[in-house]
Image (cartoon, rainbow, N blue to C red; front, side, top):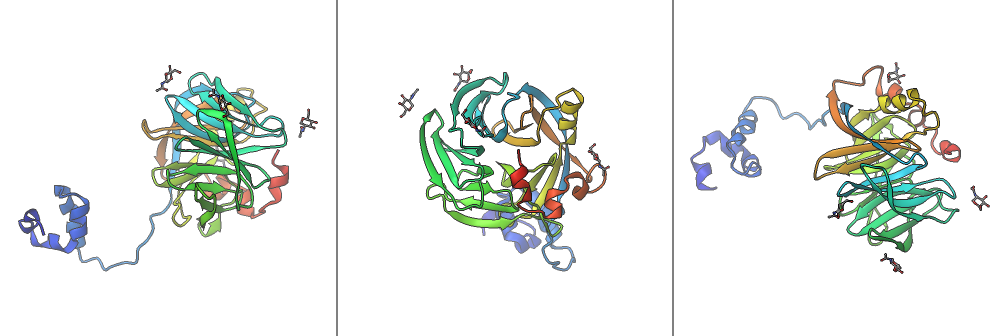
Length: 312
Ligand SMILES: *[C@@H]1O[C@H](CO)[C@@H](O)[C@H](O)[C@H]1NC(C)=O
Ligand SMILES: *[C@@H]1O[C@H](CO)[C@@H](O)[C@H](O)[C@H]1NC(C)=O
Ligand SMILES: *[C@@H]1O[C@H](CO)[C@@H](O)[C@H](O)[C@H]1NC(C)=O
Ligand SMILES: *[C@@H]1O[C@H](CO)[C@@H](O)[C@H](O)[C@H]1NC(C)=O
């Protein structure tokens, strides 16, 4: 024990790890005090999922011909984006403020671009209905390699800087080794014991994986260690507002980007003319009804692969 501990009240010895973790902050006394309470050692209970609405911080232009399948923040007010649809797929670098496409690589017309993530200087991209993916140099998209993977399809990608997280339209969240592209871990995403399927575009945010759930206006926040749902973000107003303003050709909410340095969250959708910076606002529960009603149908009904063929 350190000298400081030896001068502390005796009950602090009951929780030495807490002292160490708190780096000798005096605050450590607070949790230690709790450890002394007569509460019996209850089995560890995971906190219930948290719920979030949002406030809109900024609205930016977004290419309304971009069928957004992958999105990430590239630093310096730029985004990297992967777009889908046959004969229209691309990987691109986009200016956040103007929505202008700065650099673009059009894909072979038989390829349908999907999830995208950036690790080091490499952009990893998946393609739909295929096990083929591509790796691009972030500065020069024409320097390209391909790989294959063992997920059942290519939907979403994200990274924590060590592994790649992948989704394939099921309730499975994969971890892939970025060198071998082998699957190194799989967890099933569950909420209230039910599988959350149709996990689509992914983003890694502070130890969680956030996923768009096709075709809903909901983002699910997942613990990648065990697949448990730690939160739900309800974004219904975004698409509704676009529809109300006459944008009748838009498709689903899809695309989450996280600027970790400035703590900014960006979201958009397929063929949306706007991209939004949002700030999450905790709410006590789903604004109305239940999560099952608000983020509905496909994953709830368990109609697993059926939607894949009607995805366009
Ligand atoms: C950031 O973007 C601006 C405007 O596009 C550009 O002039 C500048 O060189 C960029 N800075 C870096 C560090 O890439
Ligand atoms: C893609 O373009 C080629 C050449 O124009 C055309 O033959 C093909 O039918 C198109 N494919 C789709 C899926 O639109
Ligand atoms: C990008 O890479 C390709 C292939 O290596 C090369 O031919 C081309 O000159 C590069 N372009 C730029 C702008 O560096
Ligand atoms: C709850 O509100 C959302 C967003 O306004 C709406 O789309 C949905 O239909 C409502 N659900 C129920 C069950 O009332």
